[in-house]
Length: 310
Image (cartoon, rainbow, N blue to C red; front, side):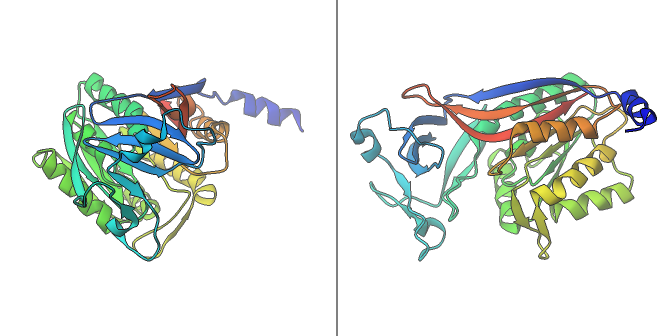
């Protein structure tokens, strides 16, 4: 390599770094990972004890079988059924939705056909982080939540005082998020609900010269936009992070990236984020989000994350 290449590359100042960082969620009033093993996990969501598949639970359950029998709902994945029909209710039939809460914020759980219930409790570490960032800013904060799903992070941001823009490609997810806003009694708070392809939305916001102080990204490994747009994380994430940096305000606070179900290490996300935030200062923190099991104290890793903090 020519000497001038190394000299010019050396002039680039990378953000500081902190890794590996393990962010842990334990028990709360409305959630607990009670036990896990044999490819399943036993959880408590509000008043209900639920069994769902968990591929990473390679170990044996810590609790006796009687604890796994006394449950309210089991995800069967029966492909001949839809929605609630893919769940088995051993005790009695349950409604599709039920009340949940986090830190005083009320919202709805739902038995979906793809095993999720609308709450990803491991995200608690990010929720507390964005809440702290908004409160500490002591100024109006604009938050963009991309791939926002049921809107828990959007509601937390709005409750903390941010002006929130929530983007998801699913009309059903947007409707669920709006229902959560009503359940949380936050209809008077500033949230724009937008059903759109995240990539196209970000590109339009750049053309409009919009900017945000905090950007959250929780992209799937693979997804489709409302008009058939295709998202492939490994193909599209680098350009998305580049554009998100361009969307940051003159006084940015953070960008938070979470990735589920991908064959990669958090080191890959970390290197991408450090590259994208060259010469912008701050710190890139990367690692895993985990749930701490109640029965045996084992850690269940759920996702990778990387976040740039100004």
